[in-house]
Image (spheres, rainbow, N blue to C red):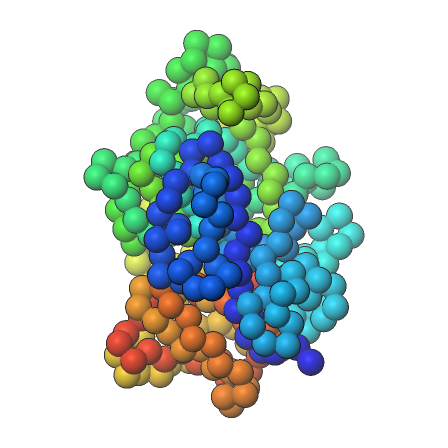
Length: 330
């Protein structure tokens, strides 16, 4: 039987620009949740079902199974009717990450559905970020400055001055950023982000600051692919305004993101559409999730994630001391 709620252990990814802030989150101090100590953890794939990496069920009858294995076993009962198939394989509809940037990430862009349909092996990648923490002066690059066309971008690339053509935006904890396919962007040094996106790892890197890897090699660039998918003249606002209570702050075609605050001693329905698979991430405090009239319960400290299966009914969240929960639905 498929439990209504699945606690998750993340899949950690070593990055040149990674750091140590993820390891300091309360949830990562639990047994089996600590990142490896010999790598620079740039990404924690909190909930992932991809060939490149999968998160793992923590506790319950499916303990130790990868999310990929669980999706293959339970199918639509877990992922819901709207979940996509990628290259013919049914996938969990969300990829949720923590990103710890101790250096600027590459300038990159992601394709949309039209490009993915025309190029087998690539997948659409729409995403949104919530700023968990930001050092003083932290920024992101989001979209091109007005008037930049393909010729200007190629010229700046040849001169090593791509950064000058992107909008620099200061960010602070709590800011929410939408990154649609075709939006050129980069996460800046000092940002710790929660990222929700379509289940895809397709990224086209346009510029990498001349950086080299541990072997002294520059990472590959994907200039022609990036130019092909960049939306010139797309000047949408990078940060989104707060949403009214009970409403998602992000409404993308394939996912939503809501910020749900639970007062001390209160119990509230989880802000998740019935029949949709989702993810709950505890941003602050400690939360208790329960479903199916209390048949399944999970206690989640700050920095922990759980999958809410599409078959779950009556899901609620409570907290003895108060909590902030980020709810993402696919």
